[in-house]
Structure formats: structure tokens, C-alpha cells
Image 1 (tube, rainbow, N blue to C red):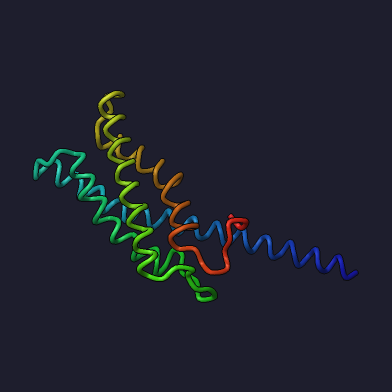
Image 2 (tube, helix red, strand yellow):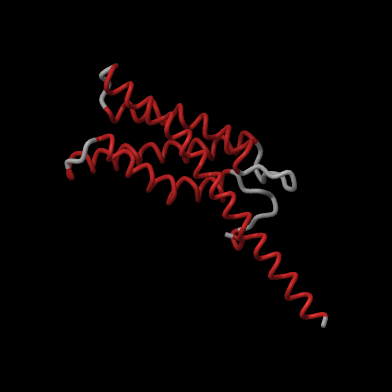
Length: 157
């Protein structure tokens, strides 16, 4: 009887953990989308109206979007009342800066290559590149490296 109760409790905990991870992922994608839309609009304005080359516009717009994204992620996306972050604010900022700079590089390169070699408009290339970088790169590093909580470990990934 005791083992059945333990198994039931374990299943409930597993469901709760999965639900929590899915909620965090959804929040991260929502914040990335909102901040990304601001970033995207800034890029269009700089490229179309200020006449800055789209790769430079991407760098400027991504930097502004990153500032918004860090704030949202720290205070809402990865925040938990029940646990503390593993790293201090300065450590998080340095880690986040690394992620952002490398992410900007990936977005600039991906957009340029898609535009130059596949002859897709830079606006569409940027959307495709952003989706890939956001899900495959930014989320993983922000969740498990920048905003890791004290209780998480590599095994929990």
C-alpha cells in the first residue's frame, strides 16, 4: 500500500514538474515574441526610414530588445517565489550579455546568409532566423545558464 502511495505522489510531482517547465517555456516564448516585435519594428524603422543597412539595424534593435527581454525574464519569465537565482545580478548580466552578443551575431549572420544566398527579403529572413535562434539557442541558455535557480542542476534539464 505504501509503495502505491509513493508511486502516485511521484507521478503527481512529475506532472507538476512537466507543467511548470511548459509554463516557463511558454512564458519565455511570449516574452521573446513581445520583445522581438519591438526589436523587429525598430529594425524596420532604422532600415526603411533612417536608411541604415539592415545588419546594423539588427544590432541596434536587438540590443534594445535585449534590455527589455532581460527585465521581463528576470522579473516574470524565470522568477519563482519559492527559489532564488543561483547567480547574483552582476553575474546574470554578464552571462546575459554573452548570450545577447552571440545571439545578435547569429541573427545578423543568419539573416544575411538567408537574404544574400536564398534571395529572401531581409524582413522574412529575420523572422525565420529569429525563431530558430530564440528556441534553439536563447531559451536554453537563459533558462539553464543565466537565470538558473539554486535548486536546479544539469540533471534536471
